[in-house]
Each structure stands twice: as structure tokens, then as C-alpha cells.
Image (cartoon, rainbow, N blue to C red):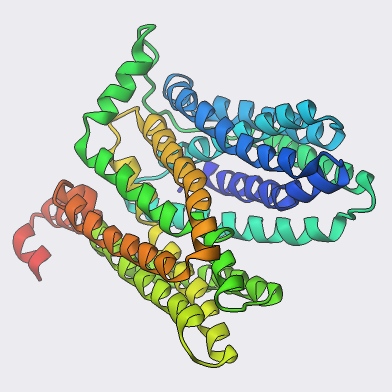
Length: 424
């Protein structure tokens, strides 16, 4: 995939490590260690989401005009300043401002890195590249959270200052590393008129397949990722009687499934129609929600409830492993030449919206209305399958089934009969 790709993957791993290193402890740090209260801590988490929603539309245009690498470097510097500021902040205003910097920087990193992967890969290698990205992101998040948890001490504010300082240093070192990446020449749209930002979004909204994919992406992130640490965990504790240690085991099962299954399913997934793969994920997640329903609403033993709840997270992990080499390459293939940054940022914006709305709805629902919660998200999972099948009707054969299209091209290049070869 070229000399740049290993460094891009290191960038993905380290950026995820930085996120997992501090974000899980933000609430405790702001509310208890700095003594700013639960209200301010909640606002900090909200500011993360709002900052991302504000920054991503501008990031897309900047990537299109300047390329992903300069945007990534700016995001890394902004994140480093935000992390360092958080470690030193003692007032509510300072905490909120620096949290906005960190949230915006980390949100912009993802479409920038995704566009770099697009520029450094081909249609044949893109699925594998994004599968590796997802694998390393989960590894970075897990390792970062594990190490960060052993460094902090709620009785000493200085331990959190050290934590955020280390995170800032990681971002700066990563910026130095990424500055050495030599990107291949890729189309850049540099002659855009001053009002072209709206034009870029208008062009994207006129792409009906991309609009449908964004709708599908919202449902995917809302029904899965938006429930992990909010509605589903609240449901497990309140309805299924799951202990916090078991909840940790369930989260570990999710990560372990991704680590084990990611490359096992890759070859199978990349040879299938992308729309059908997403539809199968919807069915797998429907089964996962039914398992969660049995854990909290069934009449089995506590051991059976625990097994069913852990299985729910594992099934979600299997679906995630199938999606990582499918959805992100599809976004890239739907983008016109030179517009991958705009499309990646738009999809990241949809993800952030889903992750903001998901906990707000799923948290209270999972904690108090147990049966409606399970039924609602089981139906959302079925909707994923329906939307995926409908999306497949709008995709070209090269977008929906690139492996078959490449096989056909190779046969034609050798002077064979493409129709017979593909059908065989």
C-alpha cells in the first residue's frame, strides 16, 4: 500500500490511544478532582460533541482545498493545546474552552486520516486498509484506557495533570511523525470560488446514494455505538442485575471479538456485496438485542442472564468487524475525484450526531423502560437491513461489489469472456 501507509496506521493507533487515555476520566476529573460539580462535568462532555459538530463541516472543505496532511497536523496541535490546557485548568470557563479545543481537534483527525488512507490505497487494497485502521483504533482505545486508569489518583490533581501532559506530548510527537509522511499526488480542488463551501455540500446532497448512506450510518451509530456506555449499560444494571465488573467483562468481550474476528471475516466480507454485508450486520445486531432482552426480561438464572448480556456485546463486535472494511471504503468510492475529504467529513458529522443523540435517548429509556428499550432498538437493527438493501439498488456494481468488478476487469484485460467468468 506504499511507504506512507504504515505511518498513517501508527497515527490512527496513537490518536485513538490519546482519546482512550483521558476521555473516560473527564467526568471524574472535572466533577470531583477539580470540584466543579456534576453540571460542569456534563457540559464538558456536551462541549466535546458540539465542538465536533461545528468543526467537521469546515474540516471537509479544508481537506478538499489543502489536502488531509496539513489539516491533520493542525488538528494534532489543537488537540495538544486542548489536552495541556485541561490538565492545568482550574475554572469552569477554562475547562470548557480547552475541552472544546480537544474535542474539535480529535474530531477532525478522523476524516483527515481516513482521506489519507484513501489517497494511499487503491480500490483493491482499501478494505484491508480500513480494517487495519479499525483494528488499531480499538487497540489504541483499549490500551490507552487501561494505562490511563492506572496513572490517575482522584486524591491527587497532579496525577491528572501528568495524564493530560502525556496526552499532549503524544499528539505533538505524532504531529512530528506525520509531518514526515510523503503523500502521493492526489486531486486537489484549489480553484474554488469564495462561496464554494455551500456548493460542495449542495453537490454532496444531490448524490442520492451518499444521502442514503448517511441515513443508514446515522441508524448504525445510533443503534450500536450510541448505546454502549449509556442505554445498554444502564439497561444491564437496572433490568438484568449486571454488576459493574460484568459490564467491564462485556466491554472486553466486544473488543476481543473485534481483535479475533477482524481479519478472519475480512476476506469473506470484501468479496461480497457491500449492501448485503451491511444488511447481515443488521440481522446480527437484531439477534444481539434479543439476547439483551432475554438477559433483562427473561426468567432464567443470573448466570444465563450474564452470559446473554456478554454475548450481546460480542455480537455487536462481530458486526463492527464486518462494517469496518465495508462502510468507509464505500464512502470513498461514492466521492467524486478530489472530494473524498468532504465526504469523509460529512459521514463523520453524521456519526457525531448519532453519538450525541443516542445516549440522550437510550440512557433514560434503558434505565427505566426496559421492554420498550429492547423493542425500539431491535426495530432499529431491522431498519439497518432494510436501508442497506435499498441502498444497494442505488449503487453501481463497482461501488457495491468492487471485488467482482476488479475480477471482471482482469478477465477483460487478458482477453477473456467477462460475463462467463463472473457468473462462474
